[in-house]
Length: 138
Image (cartoon, rainbow, N blue to C red; front, top):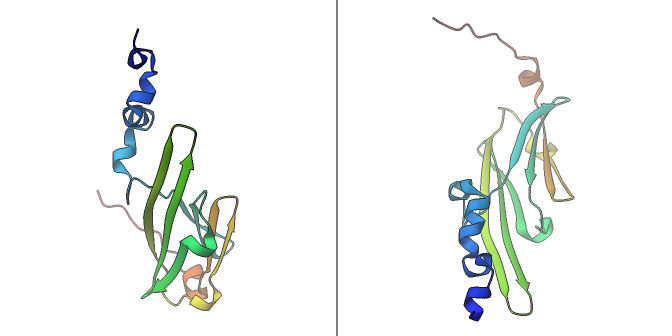
């Protein structure tokens, strides 16, 4: 039996096995990277939580607000080296969120803990009080 025949199939075609383990990988954004996000209202704040494990928030994350749109941009540069193999992952991802009118951008706060970026946007009083039921036409 040759050395090639004894090798594990995963070591011969690692990308194929990665695809089978994650069949929706073709829908990833920005060089195969995804950014999972939660977006909800909590105690009068618009909260955005982004899953960014392994990212240095001081160097690799940029949060901007322009024209009422909050933009989170992150870049990943990761290299792993083992005895007979090396692997690297890199890429960037961006997500944008339209903010309510009259948000005071100076009150927006961001924090990063255990791979989760949390951005809290205080809602203006007008947006908090406004609620209207919408009729469904048949």
